[in-house]
Amino acid sequence: MRRAVFTVFLALLAFAGTARADDFPSRPITIVVPFSAGGPSDAMARIMAEHMQRTLGQTIAIENVTGAGGSLGVGRVVRAPADGYTVGFGHLGTNVCNGAIYNLGYDLVTDLAPVVLLPSNPMIIVSKNAIPARTLTELLAWLKAKPTPPTAGTAGAGSGSHIAGLYFETITGIKLQYVPYRGTAPALNDLVAGQIDIIVDQTSNSIGQVRAGTIRAYAVTAGRRVESAADIPTTDEAGLPGFHMTLWSGLWVPKDTPNDVIVRLNGAAVEALNDPAVQKKLGGLGLDLPPKDQLSPEALGAWQKAEIAKWRPMIKAAKVKID
Ligand code: ASP
Image (cartoon, rainbow, N blue to C red):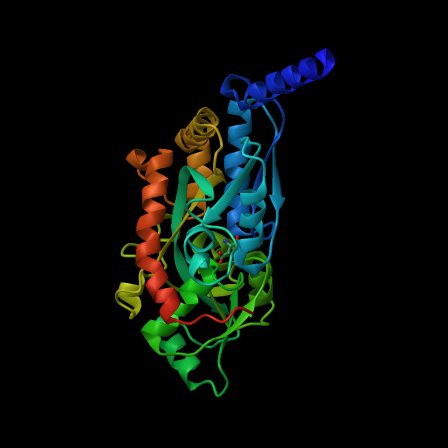
């Protein structure tokens, strides 16, 4: 009996220990990226993790849990222990739009706790080089004239590239044939190889290939040009006025994660975002830092809710079929 009581006492001590933030982190942390390695989410997560692990004094591993527009990776985080050692990387698609597309079996707001808002970037309309167009107007004419629906690479239903494609269809009246991948890294490989016609991609993913001349860029979906790619016009300038879309990202942990653990993770992420070397890497990818007054966990929670109100009606109206 005594022994049993003692064992329970020890277990309670251990539990109290894991929940205390002054011990956190005492072992490696995993950031779950719900898209493939080498893609834009993966790239941002790795830049952040590299700095955060120095602040936290523990290794941060990246695990790519891909498929179903990122909903499998987010599900993994929802089901993980609420101790701060499993952190989910997500974005407008995975943590806002997927709730209107998939029967997730979890709630994106109540089953997760927000940690920090991460950089955002506009989308960029890119095509394979074999398409003879040089301007957005010429591209639209070519796509419209094509006897079969043009193919558009995406990272699956509900991903950023898919939502941008739906928006593109709505605004241009052009019907696209989506080709889903486990991330836009493999989609981009196929665009370079000429296997698909276009991607409405995250700028940070395509920009390197655009610079290398292996694919062609027509416009960025923003009201102003991207600093690191100033020769690419905006959609307003190029002939699709009002086609604006910003894809932002963030970090979440399972609900019930102790608040002081969230505060530690948030602090490490904010420190990374304030580091000039990190800022340079992010800027080189065409990413914009979140406003300084939007870096608290609460700010991400409020922003996510506002984006749910804005995007889900459009996604529902598009009657997305899950591929
Ligand atoms: N962010 C995704 C990726 O990293 C792509 C997407 O959402 O379109 O592959």
